[in-house]
Length: 99
Image (cartoon, rainbow, N blue to C red; front, top):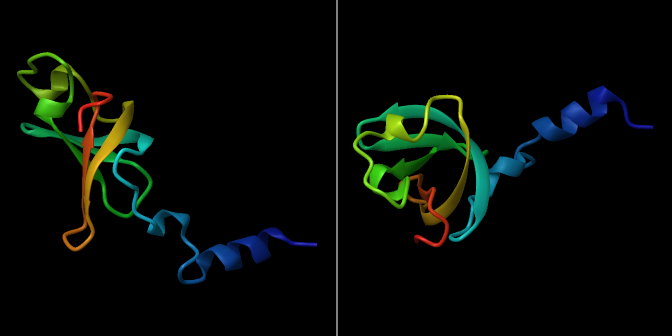
């Protein structure tokens, strides 16, 4: 019978973090807004690096500042538009179908 200690020990082993796998382009994810800046918002999508939604990919309308659409702590649905593994960058959109 597995104990909580056994499960934690397994999860702590190298390579066992399910977040190690980068998301694929087109993938739909839910995430938490971690930071809002003038040019967009950083969203925690469950991998080691937050993804970035540029202001131009936040809505189907003109957005003057990202704070018009999101706030820190909001849960949002995003789609992956690009993954640069070498630079550890994930590009996201909040507009379905806008890749």
